[in-house]
Image 1: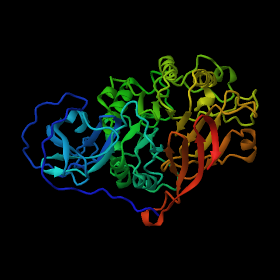
Image 2 (image 1 turned 180 degrees about the horizontal axis):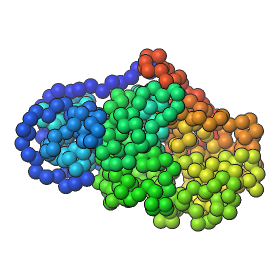
Image 3 (image 1 turned 45 degrees about the vertical axis):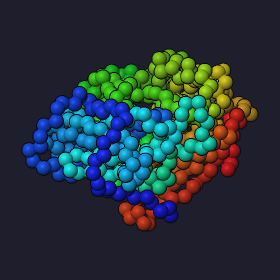
Image 4 (image 1 turned 120 degrees about the horizontal axis):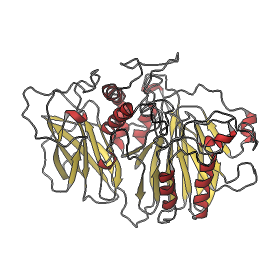
Length: 513
């Protein structure tokens, strides 16, 4: 069992800094009013960072002395609160290199988003917040390498699907112990509806499906009270995208009436308030600009996709005409073209598509005439999948790798232009991260299914995440699992690597490692 690096509370004075930064909520900060009553300890939801650049990152916290308050406001008084932030080169916070002040306001549930700039590339930093005499835990983050430089290594974790009720967050504890350079979270950070399985280990405060802004805010707060989740956020910067449960199960953006625009706006506002996202992602009503690209020098480019806001509604399994229609889309035409245009830029040695649903074909029997598939996946959007795959082949993308969540199982797959041709060479790789805690209630794939889909190299049905180690020459993917998500005692839960694969530079496809 790994030794877990627990975050500590650091006491000390506030140092002045001189580097530029911006601090935003969903509303422009108003002038801070003097406190009329002492504010109880407000940092119950921890700290986080995200979206690193060569000279900065996003820093996040949310003030909530009573995080489970049903009104979603975290027990905060109806007044502005001045929050000081600091960035240092050491965990003891003695060498402060940037600092500033931002005002947390109730209209953004007293959340804080700060974007320090002017920092050195490719190095660790530490940060904390102070509000009315209370100090937050110290978090670790990291800047990206300078543009045009080729780092020797990048370690990142890939995770998704963390149903609070269905399991303890032991996988987050092990992610924190990894101290990776990055964490990619690919959706279902919260669940909008409650679970009904007999193995549930804990319950939500709100037992009905959440639909209002207050309810979404309270749901995020309940998730963030978990110490393992707080530790994972404090250990590394995160790059996040949502899937369906941050709003409503199986929602599709092309259906503009269900969920309603008001419910979308509420869910997106709560998502922004609780994620370490830049001001460029602030929602505009019922829309949110989420898809984006982030570079790690010339080693890697992460294309973070949004497969929900522009998605065509799900087809019926077996409806071949609809499933194969060229007009069906998971990303919308504009995002698809944005991605294809990015494939023409060959500055990164490895291109990662961070997205939500399984990309590889997983037909029931491998027959080209069969459309009995999971249509909440790229199998239900076959023409667009073919265009994107052909797009990276035609544009000479050197090392395309699709990163996926959603399905509550580990998968490893070779990607092809023609899945029906078993002798066709791979043109890319897919790594699917199992859930942090969400249960998979479907039957395990049969031997016949796996035989009909030989490009599916591995499947595992335990909770965990994917740990990736990237160098210019090789990607090593470790499918990490925890021994149990139902055991409450962390001392009785271990982690292990269930399977390990390698992808070599310029050689698409999985190799045993």
